[in-house]
Length: 311
Image (cartoon, rainbow, N blue to C red; front, side, top):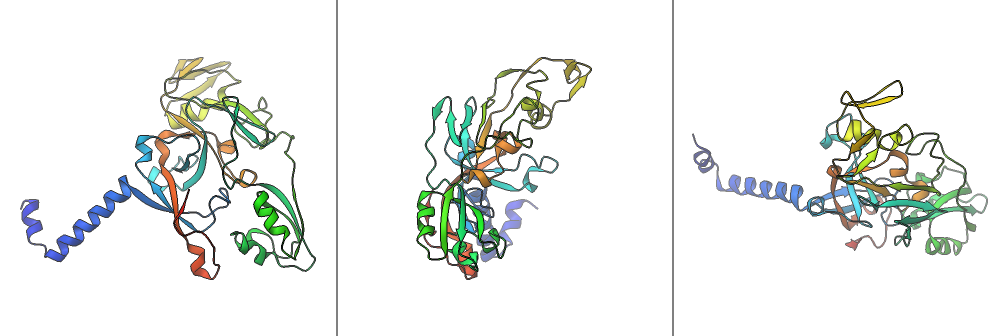
């Protein structure tokens, strides 16, 4: 029996339901989908519990520097794409850009980039003895378990406006912005002794673009090995002092895809491209456009100003 004949046997209400489900599926795939924020890496632009509308068409029309991107976790490449966790970060550099962080300030192609609205730094907050921090955290949209119970001195992701707001509270003794770090970290991308960078002083690093020809040497290999072997699925091997790609000696490689460098707006509390490298363009899901509401408001923790908030 042909499909049309089978559809005629379905009651009208069933046909209407199938049509509605089909339209919802098309909307989800090509127009708009929803993502719930669970971490504080984009605080205070996005808060835990925010239900975010994601423009799906942007994944095909293109995302740009400064956009808030939603993408599949590139590190979870041991599982199918649809099973990977979705992450939300801001695009700091697109294909072909050179990204650098100096004393906590972002530079792209040598030009200083103003902080994103709501971007936070690392602030040391001191409360009066015996004060419970949970009420203070609720006022600024952070979960109660963000600070260990009983602590009266702790670090929070704040900006000047949030710090000024906290200083007015009677239980807060002080809030001080912490300086940038100059100590080299050994857990940042690209992993190797030649890159003595840290969260606040990072790069310069070129973001690969499709068609780029890059030198492959023991020095540059930490930058490109994951691109070559995982994202673009080549066989990369080292035989003595010689590097081979798909069994052939190679000292250069032509990049096939576009890549992005992303950062959280809460940079001191964000695991982002500084920790695991570039985001392949085919991992992008879309652009975060607006906050519909904050789900935590329904659990007895009202969060103000999150209804239909544009990003």
